Length: 237
Image 1 (tube, helix red, strand yellow):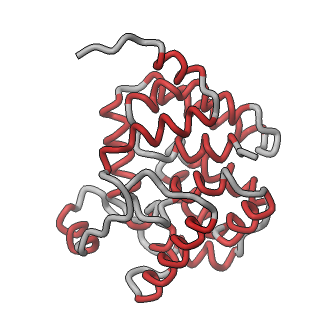
Image 2: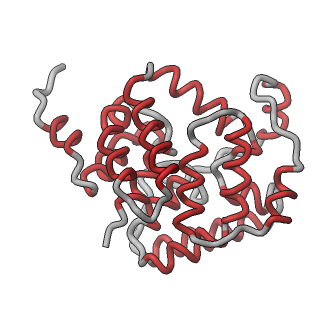
């Protein structure tokens, strides 16, 4: 059975697009109705979604890049926080790909398999006990990322709070403290960023510009009114 909230959280944490922005009212409504999530977190998620709908798209995209692409300590690639650049990361990535394939899941993106929105899309199709076990394994990462986003006064913190609440497990305080002891990256220091991230590009899926079909498929599964409205528009050149 599809977990619509995990789908919605996957979309909220994805790179902003025009289509995604137009669907945010529906995504916010899904999360606002999920009583597994604390009331204050649901309010914060609705506010985040409403902010998406009203904001300039390029501002949203710049904010996303500055947070998640230019800050290693806020990376959405989960194994970055576990294995760094060690050889163990490659083995963990292969294992995760095999898990996806065994579940009949093929990500329609070139993001790495451990990219959080990709993982959440997969988990949205799995039994909830499996979802909780997986999220519980990453609880310290989720809590540390939430704390870092609170420091930056980012509404994205609510998405991580919701995931921790869905996991329904207290994160290891020592592990969280260890992550938070690392200094925050400076996303404006491009020279340092290049030195840290310089590595061979690895592609695990279709072209990154294929993001729109992924969003459309996910919204279709959520029976999104925004998607139905978009499908009704005339096609123009």
